[in-house]
Length: 159
Image (cartoon, rainbow, N blue to C red; front, side, top):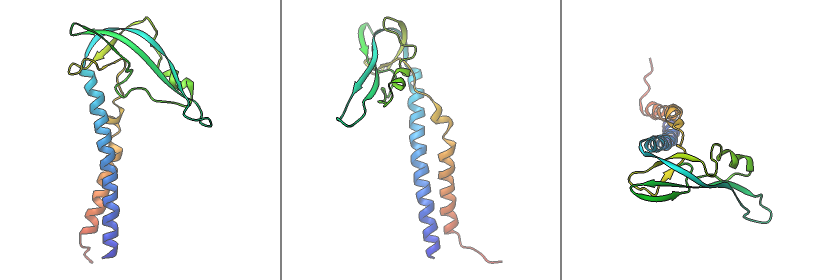
């Protein structure tokens, strides 16, 4: 009986972990796909560069890409600072921050995608949809956990 409870708990843990990561990946995929339905409009890059921050004396400097672009939508002139919907990440390496600015030049005419429900939200680049193509892995963990739970509940019959 103790073995069955132990296996059930292990299976439950695996299912919860797999299910949580499946949910995260589905959410990421849906958000990345949603921005592809936004309206594409012309934009002008007004500022682009790398921002630095130093949290403490003994902490290395962090770097992040910054951008400001202008666009016209719904008869209004607006600006945005978002490269991607999730914003930019801070990095310990300046080159990593600079790679987020590849293809973005000050004064360059480009395209941006505007959220029609919130026209203040506009992006220059879409997020990747890779999470949707990788969801199989946490699905295996989820299904495996369900299998362990099911196996721990079934009575074993001796032949």
